[in-house]
Image (cartoon, rainbow, N blue to C red; front, side):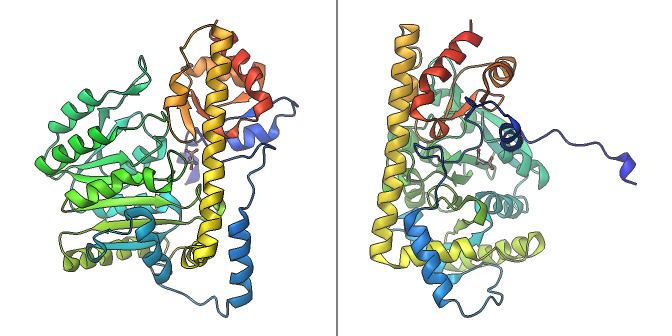
Length: 392
Ligand code: LMR
């Protein structure tokens, strides 16, 4: 039977991991998959995470099943991290999930029982549309990014969403938009909240990079603002980046209901989604997050570590924009300092991205997305030179 199959196209992001590993050139530069790297090029285990793991190993007495929603304490302590101390907690239910992708899968699977269409920004992280397609949602693209200005084209986005049908699902990036790094202003979020409420649209906010933009609290502003205004909402969050526990697959799916009772029913539906998909999430990463967030001292240490990562990304953005300014004698790349989070679009075609890889050993996604956090300071000039060369 398998002779009927054709191999799917390789994943545009994850295939870069092995391609980069197989490249023997000394000066190769990895700006592909979205992982943080320190100045030595390593993706370290955070000290707060190591300490939590030490405590976990010492205290864990069983590895028996926990249930479809994972660790209940994790689910309790993750709510204020995302929704803030003043969250309408009685209307929010959280499920621990295998990473942000696991959260998106069960939330979209759940939403597909209520609605048939999802609006996704153009561009967006590739897996958004792939998951939506997998659960049978019709995908409508709304304009988001204006490549000419390097900013969000908010009037076009708003006009498109004003034409959406009541009940449609709308995917939004809570902060640090992937792949553009261009976020809405607070004023624009407020206007958008009005459109969502008026058109009775169901927001699905993906917040995978909390802490990598303007700070842990600042980056959650949009989620918290929407939660204060909308009757119902879905949120997918990830602990992969801000806790640096990528392979431990830890995230959360949140549902905000009109009432505690409706939220509880929605939670039970999400659990049913989890049961058919993977039964229950892996424990280790969530146990680490739980131990950190339950301990004030460890939380403070972790917050400092997130801040160190955030500052390094901001410094790299400045250094990169300055290097482009020197080399091109223009401000054409100044948008790099306005963007937030790990990613920006550097404005190369897929053909130019291929040349960068083949001729210069620079690995980036075909659409021109670079992971700023993958750069080492001493690679900045070589990277700038390579981009300027391929762009002629
Ligand atoms: C990315 O966008 O690079 C990360 O979210 C990793 C992934 O799963 O694609």
